[in-house]
Amino acid sequence: MLGALSALVPAAQATPSLQATLRVGAETRLLFGMTEAMESFPGSAALNAARREGLRCSAWGAPVQKLALQGQQLLLVGFSRCGPDDLGLSEAYGPPGTPLHATWITGALWFPKGRQLCGNPYANQIWEWHVHLDVKAGRVERMRTLDMRHDPLIPTVGDRHWCRKPAPPPALPAVPIQVTPGEVPLRKATPRGS
Image (cartoon, rainbow, N blue to C red; front, side):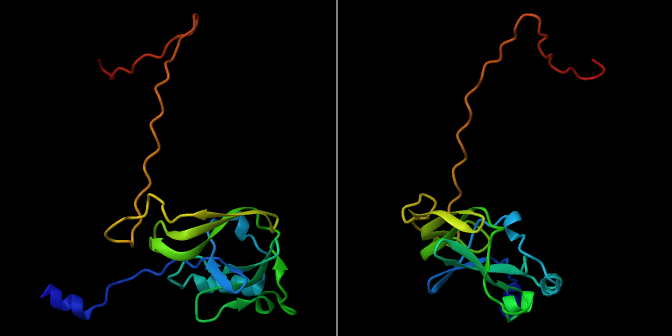
């Protein structure tokens, strides 16, 4: 009986969070590493309305930045939001809608290149290459590409929807505690009523 019901009722699926994107040349990629401080773009009434609309959306985080890399400059070119249409700069801030230098972004960001090797939108994701950007006031100071094709977290067999969990960090070595003359060592706690 339960099997017949499950064939009629589709499985529930959550919506992944909206995520910032970065256009590099003709390619647009997901952008990872955005912090709350990096999301402090200039506000407007239209952005506040988009934020309120986002409260009725199952995807978290509307509106989010759509950025472009031009030379070494990060430029804000628009916003993704819940619903079928993105929010353009002219709609967000009024005419002329020209890209804004994203001076509020400082920190480490990365975007994927190549095919996804394992992961899903709700967990750890690994692509063939991860391109890391060090950004200061909207200017890319350094860019480096990491080859992830032999990462130990990629499963060799089985379900590639899930990457392996990283190994726990090694245990710290025991450190002896020395009591110098004049100090009172801590006593073990004794239960009350003893």
